[in-house]
Image (cartoon, rainbow, N blue to C red):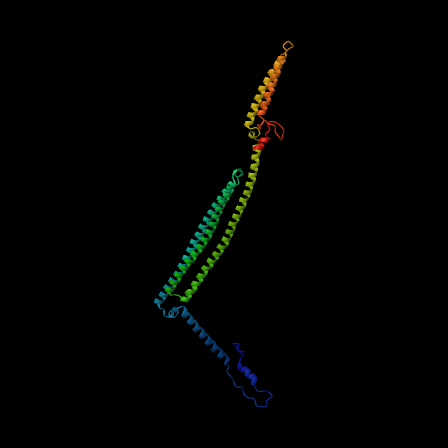
Amino acid sequence: MDKTGYVSASLKSESLFAPSSTSTAPPTTPTPTLDMTLALAQKAAQAIRAQQQEIESVAILQSDPMSSAQPYKFAKLEKKQEQKRKAHDFAYKEYRRKLRDLSDEIEDLYVAEAASLKSTLVADDDAVGVLFKELNVDENLRMEPYTYVTSMWERIEAMLKTRTTTVTEFGEHLKSFEITRSETLAQYLRTMVDTMVNIGLLLPQEIERVAEVESFECNAVIIGNLRQHAELMARMEKEDILERVEARRKWEARLSDWRDLRHQRGIMEFQRDITADNFTNPPSRVATFEAFKTEQMARHEIRCEVLKRLGVMTNDTLASTTVDNIRTSFHQVRTNTRAHAHSRKHDPFVHTCDLCGSHACLCAAAQRH
């Protein structure tokens, strides 16, 4: 083996074709041979290197036309090429600047829309809370009719519909922001591509690849935002439905409370009415008994006068005529009493009750009324 690592072919030939020691032929001097393997390998390597240099030169010539002019130092071409490079870089930087400005503007729109949504939802929830606060007062609810409870639900439902509309409009606004971003970025990208094509620093195919990279980045951002919008709207709509269900549950609970309160009110008013003086001792009854008492007192005084006349009689003054007169007076008083009782026979306050058997009872009067 030589210094280059190749096995010498002369050694192999000597070992294969050398005469045998047992041969009877006379010894001869070996003929020297040349090793052509190393020379052929070196020549093939040189050919490969030349081919690679030619390929690299063609590739450089296709991507950079100034490479062929560099050995000759064409100042005008170099200056023109530098101007194109600067214009090309400026067009790309201008596109990126517009892209950042647009992102900042849309971010400001997002912040403003979120603040507006928050304030609107808080106002709607506060309005619903005020209605429920009014509905939760038992003293007022006890005195209101059924139409009041149903009208309160109509007002609450109107506020809930306003809240749902607010959430839906918020989703539409988010979608419009991304549509605006897409349309504006497409316009910016077309402007950049047209500018680069007019500059002519890169081939149209290379500019198209740059535009594809930028458009892919923009589309990825827009699709990601739309996906986040969809998740956000799903959560907000779910929350809105839960708010509506909770409001309905609270209203139905107050409706049940209204029925209980009205029932209790009816019982309380009935107990109050039947125990009131106007029912147990009405003014007409008081006037009737006062008149009856006055008439009784008058007849009692007459009876007492007759008894006094009877009491003052002695053996000297006792006479049949006087006794007959006194008996006649007693008979007249009794007749007047019976006549007075007969005249008040149909009075509801003084007649004999069929239920309890007492005079001046209210049972029959209550049955009539």
